[in-house]
Image 1: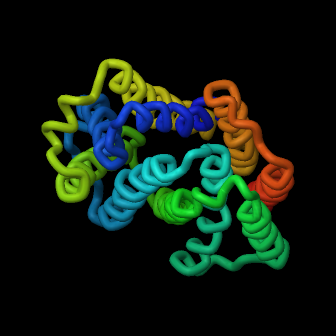
Image 2 (image 1 turned 45 degrees about the horizontal axis):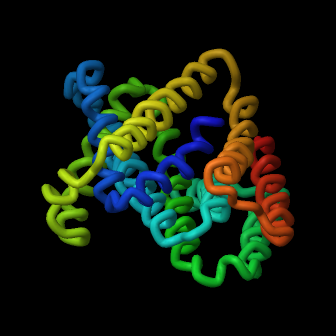
Length: 273
């Protein structure tokens, strides 16, 4: 959870070094793909998994990381973006109801409502006046992360290396094309990335996208999903703490109040079967 939380301030450091947001997302996915290729070996899954794998790869590899970087790029403060990512859980539950026809209990509806209420409270923070576009992109990031979690449930039988390598391949190629059209000369931008920025991008790819996810999958071998999922509520706390240490970003009282509402709601959403 510390690694997951650190992804946001680390990405902001790279963006502050003038790395284009979509190109950075593409390079992050490209590194993930390169590392996992020897384990994947381009082996295709059974046909019944192909559709879900493609949807998961688009949702996670393309939209989640692109909107994450765009939200940070268009925000002068990071903590609300980290907290906004928690909306992935209520979005995921809503998506499972529409895509998988799962029933949503009364208690879940109440917690979904309160989680969005917490975000509304944060919206009244005067510090966010010039950061609404960033929060909009953060909401889209959370939406597609929630969708990715729904599709991932249909891929339980596939090797982790295959899923992550496919995500890296889709993300790298599609985001590189998008970067070319929206951010200009890709080669020029690529050459202008300095050594420190490469270290930050590598950290996101290796520590966050690979190690943190692999550690979670390792825990799934010994514990139930219901035991592990509530710990996801910790990563915004670590992320906000790191944001304070790196950027000296002090949360306001409105942010703290909204944050408590969101994190508490998401925690209990994780706990409900």
